[in-house]
Length: 214
Image (cartoon, rainbow, N blue to C red; front, side):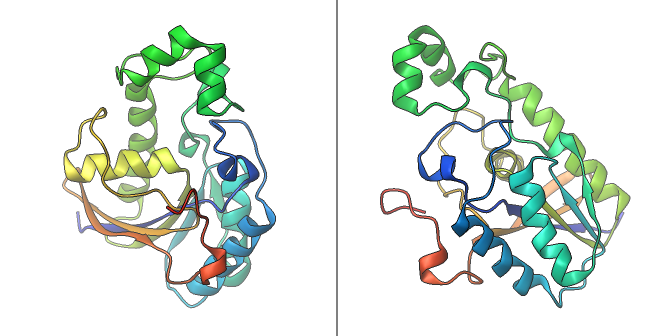
């Protein structure tokens, strides 16, 4: 199979992103800045000849994809397997709130055990199998072509780790940036990182900043 190129995009900013709250599968909407970021993505991809447009079915990803669809005429295909990792009792809370309310669960979670699932949540291993399986299926369906996928931060994290042979518990040396463009090649059942964290389509005041780091 010829290598497929996936243009993988993290959704635009939400209020919970800015407040550093665990989102998981909670269906949080784009913030005003997030909508501006989505429009910028639409402008960037307006003349790009990709063959299909996929998205998580959560509104923050779907609405980002719809902004691209509005400029390209490409139909959005929503797939729940592209959702963020499910975090159960942690969703809606900051790290400090999680540590205070659920100390035992927080300790287990921060041990980076890939088999551990927060109550009501999903283990890292199950999540990785879900999202990477879906992305591989998309790549194989569109062999040798270019496809856009709008999804979530930890889906991108899983792709980065797969392409670079980085274990679940190892520190990722690059940031996850809202509305960033990331390119991956897929062929012979393997992922290859081509481009990471491109935000050249965003104005300086459209880049989401967390404590000085995107």
